[in-house]
Length: 271
Image (cartoon, rainbow, N blue to C red; front, side):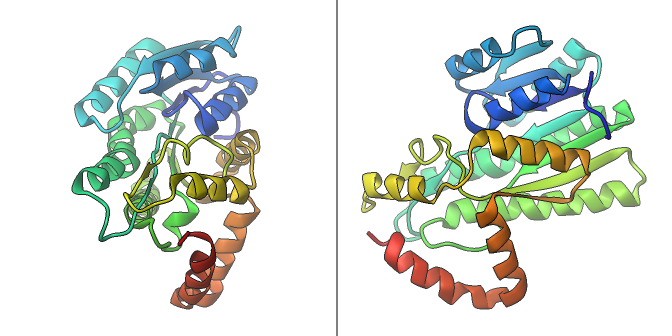
């Protein structure tokens, strides 16, 4: 996919943050947009910013498998084709393994992993039929390293990474006209931390303030990096200087990165 003009792009989680910024960036490049979110008010705000763009919005809960498959059929019917799918919707949880509830663990996995997996599988036939498709799944730097109090989020984002990398290889081996990219954002200045669920012993205010200090990249910059990565058909799209640093540490040290994370966590997470 060398050009985006007149391509039909699907973006989940488009009501705020990276999703909204992606909608703007894709609109600037001439895409036709199918935008979804569970937050209808935020979604309407995103759409209102895109004057003169061929855009349609959909309320979608990505944790609902049947809703995602119905959404794929609806988008294909509304636009006549689908070229690009960005599975971006996500949530966060800060809690230890001992403390997190089954409900919270399931909540994270249903949205952050199953939402991506079902979104990919639902749209894949339409992407193949387009003759020029691209799947973009948003993982995280926490899909590269394990971090204390992020076990559920780590589990989901590592799963997204493995699922996406396997899919990319399958598409190549089967000679299918679908490119596949996995995105690993570092700290992005979005509302995800404020909307995160917290374990009972967590100092929510301190944790959220700590995240805000570490967030190095704006949603707008993140969107530009992702879109450029799509046009270059990058298999792994690293977003932000912290993402590049974490990827380098992981690659150079392997599992020996863990003592570094422990020292950082003792100072910054166990508060």
